[in-house]
Length: 235
Image (cartoon, rainbow, N blue to C red):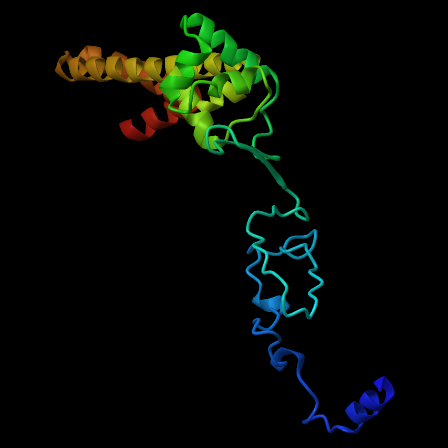
């Protein structure tokens, strides 16, 4: 019987052959879903392969169930993510987003809590992330998302960069910033004093002005050019 069915199928023309997508329904069930009709997670292509790394082997069983694949994580990219359910999934590890996020930053958080005489529970509540938010970070090794890290830094009164950057580098940056500020202030003070001196010089006697002009020329232009300017001016 099977051979006869095969022969009959072979005798059909290409137009008459049955298209699996148009197969009749069995027992009132809907026809099987094809691959492109599945609601899979929508991810862009990466160097590791296609965004959807699950080659689904779809059987032509009319009673098959449609599986929601929205909860699957992409596993064939450069930066896969792992996520934990902490206070409604408020914690995530983004691989490679925070290159300076080492264990030292946890020590800085603990030190800042001590300096502010603040408990982990108090900081968690102030951040609005649940009572165990800070404890999960410091004691259980959970990594905060960028939004949660920003909320924690606000509670501690520092910037996110201050939390993630090494203390020694922060000190060096602070010293450099102080030097730049002092230099800028000195420059502003000198220009202000020069303006005052020139204002008084305009009102001074001609003899004083000549002496001041001679000194200024030698200081600004050098001796040789100062003499040339003076000679050309006199001629």
